[in-house]
Image 1 (spheres, rainbow, N blue to C red):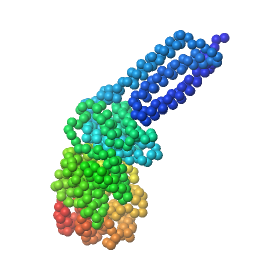
Image 2 (spheres, rainbow, N blue to C red):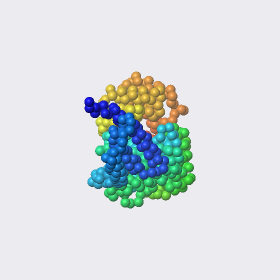
Image 3 (cartoon, one colour):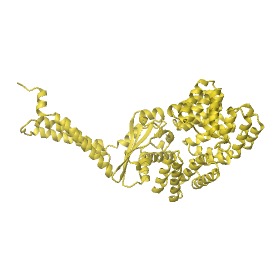
Image 4 (cartoon, one colour):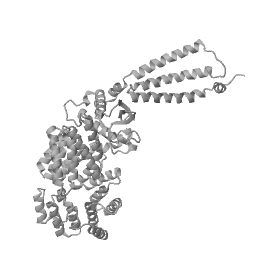
Length: 576
């Protein structure tokens, strides 16, 4: 009786090949990848090994079929010949496939020189549990953004958007939809013994295909060398059209230890606590001690101090002076460093109140770097202060293109539309921001503003309640005063009276931090005399919130028509 094919399979135990061979192959591939990472071997060795293993699987199947039964089975010349032919074909295929320069060839064929490219650099993944590499997972990508901005003509998505993109959306489809970027740069950082392994890929998000990739292994923490190789490798791949020909400013230090301090400071500077701010400044100051020519570190000191000065009182002038000295040092070292002009403009605007000089600096910053979303956002705010709304909206929309999902850019667009009287557009911008950042308290407050002027008080109270829920018992004095304003404008009298009592239980003329907030609360309660007096207190305190004097929508006619209010605006050289 002839054996069936199934019986032969069982008898010769072919199943062992399908179980054991893939398991053994997986171990071999893991070992090859380990040696590539640890010793910096050519990554093509992995492709070479994979092709060999595919050929080996065919050999294993033939061998098992012919010799899988119990007892002895002789080797035939035909069998040996088959093994030789399969081995030769496999070896030729392995050499051909792994030896092909697919990185460059694929990139050149996939990059359309007639097309505009928008690139998002995402935070790198780092080894789980290794806290010492946390600052590298954002520090290296941020430095790559700066280097690519200085060396390529790609439009780059701001770190403010690419770094906050939800982890679940950090894929081709998510980046294309939410960041509107048709290229994304991703990476992974690992440590193997004393080696630092960085693996980068450039992905076309429209086709979800890799255009470029590189893997670098170093036995030291010389981040500069890693970044330099990554950028050089990528730049050498892309067509000439996408390469910048002129020399541009450098945003990094050639001293690795100084660069490391700068990156650690940048990671801390995005925090919100006083301790984090102090630590960030310590790192920046150490960076300039190690490298007195480190322009970006001076700008970081100035930027951090300028932000702190916005919330300071007695020490505000001293803080601004340190910021001014740092930014002037940066500009002396490199007058073409765009971010330095942005911070310089903010100091001239908020502290010096030198409007002409501030605008000149903002324009210079944008001219030097049209991908600078921060400069566009700050200049928008400047323009709204002087009621130049058409220009402000143009800047705000440009900022959203570069920085599409951050609170800063969407708030900026909403604010510009609000002041321009485009209330539906303002409501949409704030709603877009809230959809992405549902716990953004100010978003609900300012969306409430835009809804007041559309007669949507039923929705205003929803925004009030959501903001109140997120705040809890108490927020800042300014935030509480703005909530009182929402209630006042929609005639929720009982709620307004309750909120006002709560406010004055905590704040009085002997215990306050924000004179502007006091003015708003008195104005909402129609105590215009006190409101005017607190405005004068704010002017005397040299408030950095002087822009509120231009917010005509926030004041009743009794304030707007008061000669003292008009005089304060003249004293500040603000539009009447």
